[in-house]
Image (cartoon, rainbow, N blue to C red; front, side):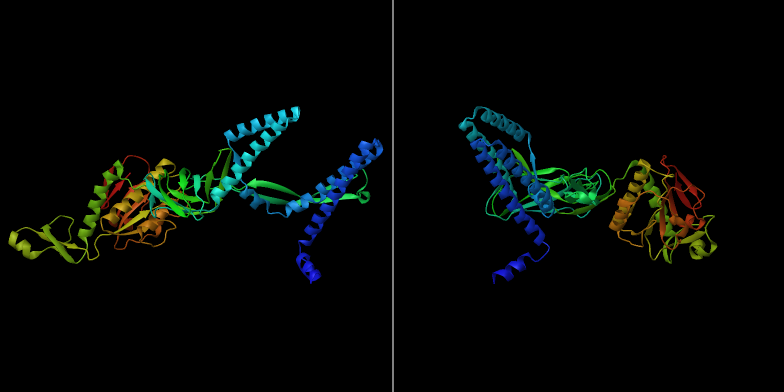
Length: 478
């Protein structure tokens, strides 16, 4: 039963690794034996035997190091081992290791056994520090919760929860978002050859090693991390959880992404800083800020007035009876009221589907509007959309590349990620319909389709101060 089991154990791609491993053991045993024979020959005064056995031991050890060690190193999960043993030496740890080096040099120079014992004790403290930090971070689990809707330049609160699933307590834990990304190994296509003797032709070289060149590099991190600070937990009992509220504030709109978080500790002696990477990906959409600026407050009454006039002027239900104006149609004259008052009176009607508004963001080209002016335009569109939704109006949205979705947060997400770019104007394909249009565009005056003037309010985005002007039944702003 032993032979079949042995064959089943080693009859797979790892067989070559095991053979090289045992061959390395045999080679090192022979090198050790040669070193012992060289010592015996040296004590007996035989110089030739000493040189021969010492050279043989050196050659055997070098052959094992060149042939077996690189081969086995490539088969080991080096990247996983490196992440497990990811330590950084602190400033205190560097000073401590400098003292250890000085004491070690003194011990070698003097041969004092007490100094050797002191060096061993100081080095064991470093080892204990590394093992303790690994034990502290081993059983920790992290959960992160962010708000659903986040607006730029508005403070929000995130929730970090740290759970210890082991019985042993944890000390001095920091949760950070700025964690180094793991190194990844990239193998080049070409091979590197080591041959000996190199002065002979390739066919006559008897010592040859083929190896692949390895290159380590760090993967690029996200440009906009969600969380870049640190939260400190001084003590976490075993099998318990602690939570912390983290205030966040995002300066700009856009998409923020966090690939991983880090658990950092310097426990117990602060010689080493141990970092454990937790692959906990999070993505957050930050909407444009909802702030009514001076320009918005100046424009808003004009938009509201035009909107109410449009709502009031179309429909079938009677809204009111008023005096006749020269631009009124004769078919709306109320003859009974005219006969009673001896003055021409007309009827105004209400809309059956009143308060239907469409916010149109005609994304301008970079040459028309860019930089801070473009950001102001995006913020103005978001603020006006938010205002009229809060006023209980039936609001729809239209923009280049935006579908027919009436949800406010979908439109805010579109504005959070939109960038100025060339493309067709949405105004050319916009139908008049029964909606009143609130249009934000960088197109020059005179290029707006005529069918939209009677049912639209146009805000011309050119970065200048807003001025009102009545034209074709619409107030435009430039």
